Image 1 (tube, rainbow, N blue to C red):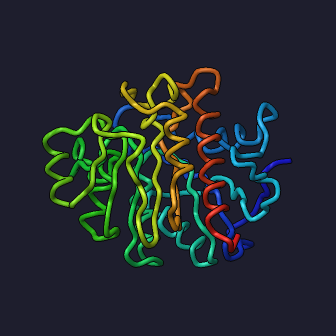
Image 2: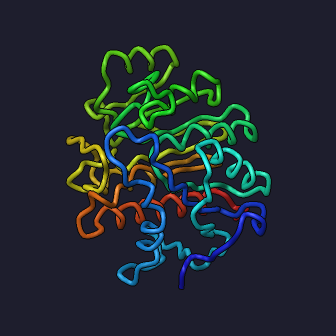
Length: 277
């Protein structure tokens, strides 16, 4: 049985609305993430797996988890208005990208609905460039835009292993807490108070576990390490994204299945923590 289908107009309060954001115009190296969303949903619904999560939550028992399909985008900033429509109906947006530039317009919408919003960001890269190749909306820059506009009160970045001098300066300027791979341990607590937005870039995983990304950066997490972090979270998650799966670089759909697994475990965590679902 597939995930229930819905339209934005039919969303109800506390629905978790999976929506594809097929946008990679601000990718700096390779195109391809715009093709990812339906392939990730296909992996979630694959007959090779089931809808149970590791703590025995059956997603088929939760019709409030729904797939809206790909958003229809004329330009980059349509993303903001689409997420705002989801929020207006009291639903929780779970955006499937797409490159990481989509997080900035999403946060513009989120910050209008939630004050004192914090971000938990999993990534190999800080994405804090003031601009890259002259593009201030590059997928290498979303968190610079978010923090300089005050769209988030706090940003924790996990799995970082590519900071340069410029991005370190940016992190210091914006008060970003960076948990890089050299200093990460399984005992590190990732919990934040208040409303939290979670942004997950697939390249936080070591490319041995997720080859289907544009930027291969060795020295990342195993899939099990990521799942343990997710399963330990105790957060009021009000919005999420999963980005930067590039099917053009995948091997036998391994990365799509990994993305599907991560989404299922994030959904399980939300369903277990919020009794309104």
